[in-house]
Length: 369
Ligand SMILES: [Zn+2]
Image (cartoon, rainbow, N blue to C red; front, side):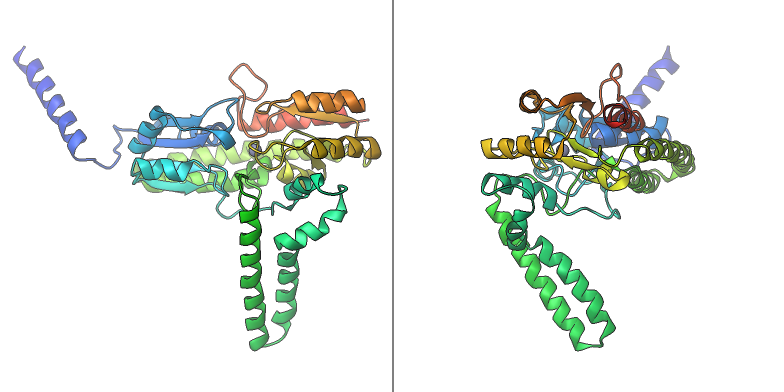
């Protein structure tokens, strides 16, 4: 009895100590990791395995664009050793949350090092309301400085061939364009997106970069388990690469004239770039924006003009509009794509790899000849 009480007492003493003086994670205490949404959560779980305790803020079928943090979310972030986020202004609510709880752990921006896509596609749609859709929107692009930026890059290349002062001119140009982009952005108040498309996970090549960033951060936070994290990474990357091969083969088989897809919001820019498809959406990059009647009308004429055969609803969006568009155009609803969220365990996309395979499979069966 005496020895049992002694054990209990020393356990309480340890508990008290850990409450007052935060200790670095040890082998006995799993690293506390918060991932902002389900897709990241799945990747983090694959790397961290049993050595982490994971909280995912926006769970399966949730929409991270319009998420409102709960008190439980605040508590999880407050207690976290590592916070894994997508970045590219996907989680517009996160900065306020981590400031509110004075988060002092390590933050991993999973998109660090990817080659981000500019948001021009989505803003072309926003302009649909004002003028006939399509490439008339070039005027709008110029205002935004998006195209100017491209021109700027070309200029850079040209100037590099010259020496010295020409480079300076190039840099001044660049700074000027950034200001333009900033102003234009202010004009688009209410859009919860930045200069780049945040949906980078829709390319498996990018997912490998996400995984590398996550692995490095976990290894740094819990060096005792680094070898396990890197071993988990190697196994996972092999699966990702195998999935990439399958999906590439499936998408390569699509006929050239059946590669345009309509979805609710612009979440598939990276998928489109990786596999040679084209995605159109009445909503922009964020599910927060409401398409105007003119946007919808422009989408309907585009579907008719281009003979787009199938539209796809998304798991996270309100699909009544897309179903109406399908009825009016006679386009088939090809299925449900998972854009920004996994499904629950019994759905078709419980993991990131399942999600990518599911999307490729339904695209292939609806678009394949
Ligand atoms: Zn999205």
